[in-house]
Length: 401
Figure 1 (cartoon, helix red, strand yellow):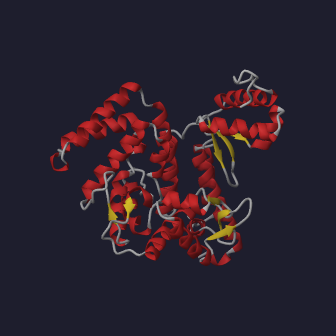
Figure 2 (tube, rainbow, N blue to C red):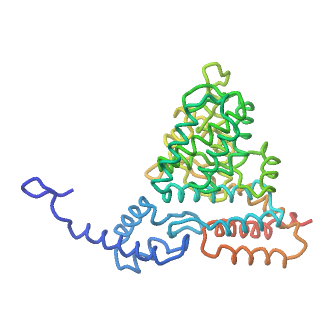
Figure 3 (spheres, rainbow, N blue to C red):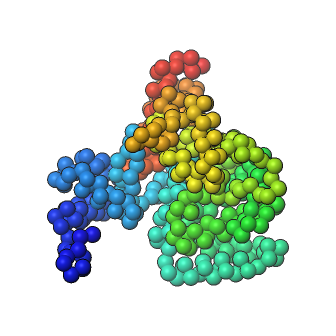
């Protein structure tokens, strides 16, 4: 910051004033638009407002930090108005994707993105009175021994949390605790609670997850709540299918949320690298990840997955050998999704679309999706994957039955 001769901050210069003006114009445009309506990209907005790209970039960065707008990257990238899809649009989208007999895991991935938006909305809108009530519930439940948690007391706590944070914030837990427990046993890692104590019972896993989510919502810690979401593993497919049949959105946990090697875990560094590789493979298969997508540096990924840089480097080398990622060096270096690898999720969708009896059914599905969520990111993500699948069909005639 510039300072005058007296050592006090000087008034804003021309550059700062241009950024402030750009922030005002962009905020006004976002407030007039519907939730998740595309506002344009930085180049279009800088031309519209008559400012340079660097000024526009500074304004975008500030409003993204405030949660006023959302920056989306990829083929449908750009700036979107803040907010989240409505509950009705969410349910209709999931219903149509399920009725179209798309793979269960793909439906769950769309639900995952909607869940994340729901958590963000909950952290912004919870009232002071609601925070106080939730804090009281958490304090009471945390002070009780798990063996004394009655079903009635737990239902009261869940009711308070759902009413304050929204149903989407908790409905994923019914499959999450099952998958967390199963995957921990499969990978020879031990589950630990937030105090570092081992967890051996599935019910304890679910209780810990709900408390973690509640505390994240209470603190307004969006990043912690987001880190509690990840897409489903193959082992959970049937469980997710049952959950979706009950009209509930399904999620699992990122490995670094509860998975940590305990002192007596037999997992070697390479075994841990293979475990992180499976998680990285899941991340690459998410619907918002595209060929050439930037995943981060090795150091950033190591911090994200809760492992050492050496383990993350081994993981990246394994992924590079499997053509999952591209490791680039230089000014824009880092880990990128391989451009030569076709998304497995897209291939699965393509195979299911190929089984449709006529092109009319496919076009009807696309029309329904466009009518349901014309301005919402969830609809754009769904349509993008479906259109990629259609393009894949045109180059893979052997997919037709």
